[in-house]
Image (cartoon, rainbow, N blue to C red; front, side, top):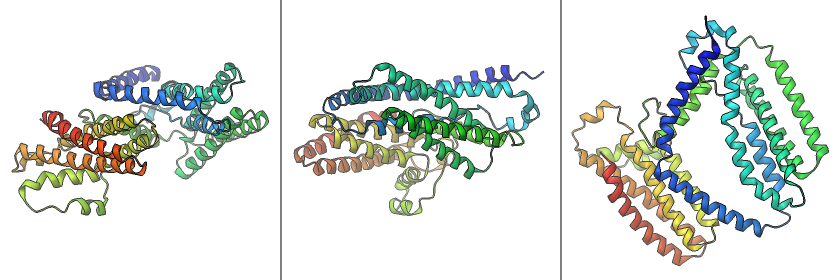
Length: 403
């Protein structure tokens, strides 16, 4: 006899084993040191900024928006796989305990978002609303947990609706109501907070009445949603270790490919062409590189300390080089690569050349940020130190890892 509760335990154990194996690679020594440095610096300047914060700072808007977005972001992890489309449909009427367990699991694994937001925004709340007791903030966190549970259940009901436009409209309206509730709650306007809560409750009941009329579970949608989330996790883990389950996404980006692929038609440029096109079209390499530049530029712009600007700029150069190293193993499962009449030394040299080019672009952009701030000495110091770091790290560390 089919026991869906026991089935969930087996599926959950396999899921934990799978994810924990890759998490060990993601949070390795390099990333742990970088995260510790980031958090320490942010905490220091955050505390310093709070001492100088103006009284009219829009804390209610910021805290209300963050809490509302966290409440709205409540995806359901069903842990379903593609074979389930064949083998579990017949047992749909027995899957109630399984899906209740997945809802509980989804709620628990998302609590870290609530804890992080509460810890990060707590000092801001205490500084702006210093006349309120700490119990008021704790009650707000309790309300956030209640709304997050409600949004999670609403998201589960909406997964019975196949039309994506209806689901997008629903999540948009609920997000607006969630933000409104927490904005008015933080601002102390209990009347409007109560009205927003009543509207959210009415929408919640309407979703329930609408979705209970749906014929059954949309299995293919559940599998698609869960597989997309796992692929996102695999793409992240693939930057630190080999992930055989990863399904590569390829984008055209024809104009970018034409821009970077103008190389002489010679054997020694084989891997130059391959790595350039891979960087532009495959995975999240280009997106991550751009994000690191943007975030690093913001750190350089807003951090007041001159030397910390330089340190953070070099830290982002390190992160870019470290993440782009994954390009070397990107085509490891393609057998045709082994048939190229090109030596391994040429392949290694091509990747290091690309890393020098990417970090060189990043160094120039960060130097421009220093110039925009009027810190010409900082630009010169970073240009020299950044170039020296790129040279030493790529030739000293990356070269040894390309095996």
